[in-house]
Each structure stands twice: as C-alpha cells, then as structure tokens.
Length: 130
Image (cartoon, rainbow, N blue to C red):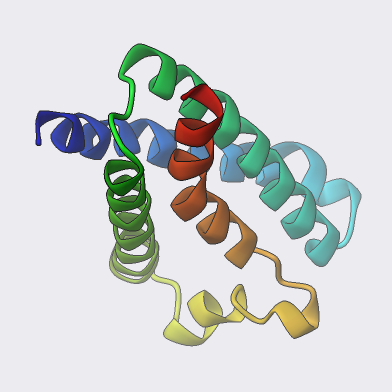
C-alpha cells in the first residue's frame, strides 16, 4: 500500500511537468503555428516527458504486480482529470466548454492520448521491467 501513496505523490511531478509543458507551448511555439498544431505538439511532448519520468519512477520505486500497476494508472487518470477540471475551471477560469473542447478527437484534439498514456504507462513499464 505504501507504493500507492508514493505514486500518488509522484503524480505531482507529472502535474508540474504538464503545467511547464503548457507554459513552454504558449511562450515559445504557439505563436509560430496555429492553435491546433501547437496543441498536438504539446500533447506529444507531454507523452514523451511523462514517459521519461515514469521510466525513472518505475526504476526507483518498482511496481510489485500488474494489479498494483493498474491501480496506479487508474489513480493517475482520476487525479489528472480531477486536476484538469478543478484547476482549469476554478483557478484558471476556463469555461466548461473550453475544458471539454480538448476531448474532441474528431476535431484533432488529441489530449485524450495523454490521459490514455497516463493510465496505461505504469502497467506497460511494469511489464517491460519484469
């Protein structure tokens, strides 16, 4: 059970990376391209950065079982969605419509890939390392 609490705390690192990733997008490359392309590039860079962190996490704090890995992934998914909507709406002041906009994959909004990756990566890295 201790490892679950450790991975809950490690999610904060992923949250900081996501915020920094968004800041880099807005400051550096969003002005150079259309908004959709910047969103897609930012999604890809978030997945790469998360992968590097999760690889380090799973090396330093090994996951003991597939069940534990799935639990971590589902916990991270819930924490990410809750953070996105609570922080996005109540702190950043984004409308609910704007927040849900990034989930429309039919319009090229690929943010959901970050959520999918965040939820399956602990299991995939567990399998790869075991």
